[in-house]
Image (tube, rainbow, N blue to C red):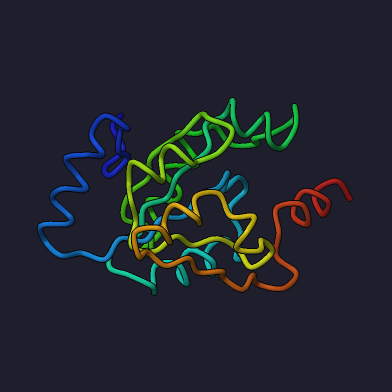
Length: 157
């Protein structure tokens, strides 16, 4: 089954050209987005509010495992992509397997780079690059008490 708006890296240049010609303000964010919860939904809605199009860089299963540990992700990358794309706020998902989304950010060249406020701007991968061409970096306030770690701890009880 093909998931609509799950973009392959090789198709990004064509998509970005189309969006730029249409003068769409592109927001980019990234993450594992495993065990989707209210905090994720709030975060993605806030990210989308900064522009017209929200592109989510999604860690592949392999990169999520490297980042989160051997027992993660809980949900496979195709399922995580489908769930994200079911959200009104998410327009496109593109997967990346690298340790960071730096190469993907350089390929997208977003107008706005969004990341959680638990990161300082100096810690946000791609922030310097985005700011170098006049793009904006936005830190998004996280929903208190909502995290994948908390959900997984509740399941263990």
